[in-house]
Length: 115
Image 1: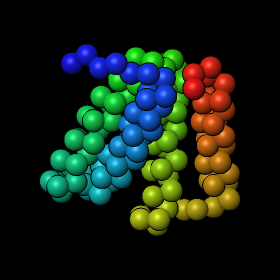
Image 2: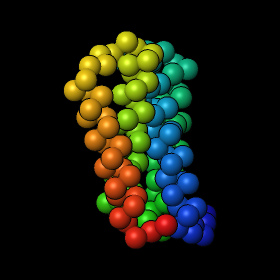
Image 3: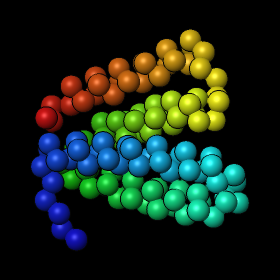
Image 4: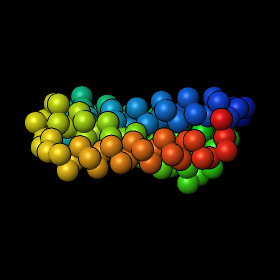
């Protein structure tokens, strides 16, 4: 399928890919080692769609920036939801590191030269 992707559309696609990365990482944890079929199926579907959208965004964005933003969205989202849903630790050092990831994502977006 040949899809034309503009720079602004690519950022929206990349954001969606990042959100799906959060979905698949959280559903992977909820699958309990792939022993709970609904969560396993959700993990596979969300991961596939996330990778596809990431690839689509690469038609218009630099690979290093796109990959860093995609993985950053996933890392921050998975960490925050891990704290909220699974009771993972929320100490100051962890939250500070999340803030650094967010700053890095914003910095890459702002300095990429792609709007």
